[in-house]
Each structure stands twice: as structure tokens, then as C-alpha cells.
Image 1 (cartoon, rainbow, N blue to C red):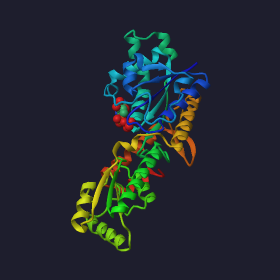
Image 2 (image 1 turned 180 degrees about the horizontal axis):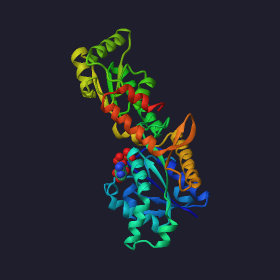
Image 3 (image 1 turned 45 degrees about the horizontal axis):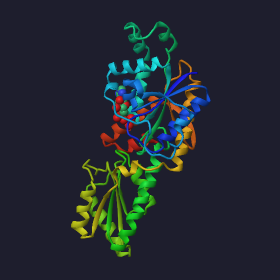
Image 4 (image 1 turned 90 degrees about the horizontal axis):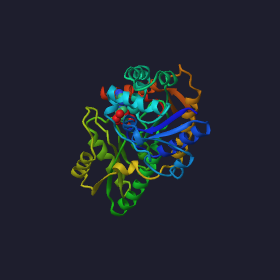
Length: 363
Ligand code: ADP
């Protein structure tokens, strides 16, 4: 059977295990020899026990677990060609020419580069007598399929990244708990949520928790936001509301690019309205815990599609990323999605927020 390996790289997210499970089982079902690579690219570079053959039962009882059971890591070695030569050696040695990468845009960029260099990496290994001529010929094509695991929903080309829905569940649960205590004491709560430069989590959270105000990176308020915020909070209290909820995305800024932090918002509320104000920073709670049904199914569907893409690949097939488009699993050119995602980051850095939102598309 064909050699196929799956690994998780970059930041973890809920639903990655469902994706790993699906890749392993679909791979075995289609007659592949399937391997786990532990600790992301680091395991690929280091080889040894990090690359382990998987079987049907090695992915039993993992679908409900958060994080990734095969580990994830950032890997400096893989950024250097020397590290990628070692990684290529470890794969060829086990007959692995199909890779499923589950990670963010950095991990997918690395995979694409690896694929572009594959021929020259094998040439180098052959020259140094690390592999045989037969191996050079037999394993001359590397196929790559990616999936995006991230709670931020910040990747272009997919409606939802694997992990976003679970993070929302976690956040909403926390806010519901806070709201009940805020009500009792007539308090104002400021909640900081994750998302890096993407306001998706903050926006959906605000809408589904009846928040009074939300700060997101894509729609920075003018510098007089403190007045608007205080007017709104005062108005709500006057109309009988006993509490206020303010959501702050971790990447929130004002029109001038100055960060709007939970601390800053608290100071504004306390100084102007003397409300009893508390901050809750959810932090890594958002990344932990069990995946939602949606993320489990999403991981399953993406994983199966990724394996099918690899099995159907021809030598000319470019690396793809499997994404969700209107509830359909689709294959998109990996590099095009990565380029668009990087263009969004650039537009945000240039303070061209409209362009960023436009480039990001539906997600
Ligand atoms: P994410 O995949 O979540 O965006 P990173 O950007 O940290 O996370 O990337 C994860 C890993 O992918 C890095 O530690 C590195 O090993 C690899 N990687 C990222 N960018 C590149 C690149 N340009 N070339 C080679 N490897 C890369």
C-alpha cells in the first residue's frame, strides 16, 4: 500500500483528533500504510519513534478529546533546508510519499515549500549515498493535502476552521456564567476573547450573548469611542438593565492603531461612570476541553476528503487544502489560500480594514 502520514503542527485546536482519526481510518480503508508523525515537523526531522505506524484501534477513543494526541510543536529546524533534508530522509526510509498536514498558514506554507523542494532534497540524499537510486525513483513524487485547525477562523477559503465552533461553545458557557453573577450585583463585565487579528470569535460571541459593545480589529472605532461606549452603557442602565457586557477581541485597536485592551476599557468605564467593573480574560480555556459535535464532524469530513484527494493525485496535482464551502467539503489550491490569508494580514497591518474583510470573504 501507499505510505501516508498525518501530523498536526502549529497551535492546537479542538477537532484535530477527529481529523487524525478520520485520516488514519480512511487511509487504512483505502489500503494505505498509515503513520503518525508526532510533534509536528520536529518529529519529521528527528524521525525515530516520532514516526509510528498507526492502526485502526490506535485512533479509538480520541474523537471526544481536545487538543491533539499526536502532539504539535513549532519547529525551527524545518525552516532550514538542512532540517528538511533530514525530514525527507525519514519519510523516504519509511516509504511515505503522502502527507496530511493539519495546522495553520505557517504549517501549510512549510508543507508547500517541502513539496517544491522534494526533487532536489532527494537528489541531495542520493548524492550523499543516504538513499538508493531505486528509492530516488520510487518515491519521486510527494503529495500533500492540508486542513486548517485553528480556533480563530482566520483562514481564507473556508467557512469554518476546525476548532472555532468548540471555542465559541466554551466562550458562551463562560459568559452565561458571568451574566448571572453580574445580574445579581449590577456589575459591568469586560470579556477578552482570543482570535489574534481576527474578530470572528468576538463578533459571534457578542451577538449570541446580547453584549452591549464589542471591539474587533476589523472595524476599529474612532478615537472618541470612550464617549460612545459610556453613552451606550448609561442608556442601557437607565432603561432598566442591571448589567453590561463588553466583548474585547485580543487584537482590538482604534482608528489610529492604538490597542484597545480590557484594562483600558475598564478605566474608561470606572472613571466616567463609576460602575462596578470586572475583567475576565478567558485565555487558553477557549482552546481546551472537548470538541463540539460540529468540530468532530468537520474533522471527520475534512480528513476523509484529504485522503481521497491524495489517492486521486497525479504527479501534476498541486498541494490542496480541504475546506468547508457552504457545507460542502471542497479542495482548493493550498498556496492560493495561504497567499490570500497573508494578504489579509498585510491589509490589516496597512490599516486597510475594508480590503481585509473583502479578501477574507465569507469566513
Ligand atoms: P501555524 O501553522 O499555526 O501558522 P506557525 O506559523 O508557527 O504556526 O508554523 C508552524 C511550523 O511550520 C513552524 O514552526 C515551522 O516548523 C513550519 N513553517 C512555518 N513557516 C515555514 C516556512 N516558511 N518554511 C518552512 N517551514 C515553515
